[in-house]
Image 1 (cartoon, rainbow, N blue to C red):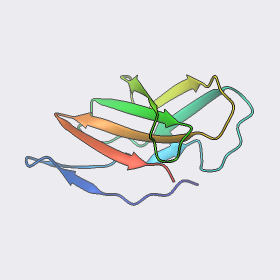
Image 2: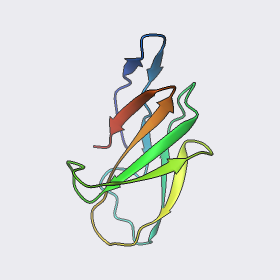
Image 3: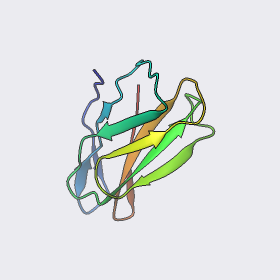
Image 4: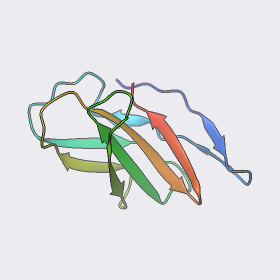
Length: 100
């Protein structure tokens, strides 16, 4: 089970909760190249961006826009250990939570 603390972020006008990561669970071995990434919906967030990296420090990563809600199915091309995080776009504010 992925657990994360709820954090309030403010852009000076309003506060919002950071997305909590749900799927896939931490340290899960996935045999298929198709992986569903899912996170909790955050009120007021219109778009989410999924970041995937083979590097825990995210020095290099790819971004994918999720327009239809809090989840995205990805076909991973490389085998390996992936790290992921999501931010929601709320006005000009980015809300970020790193997966563990």
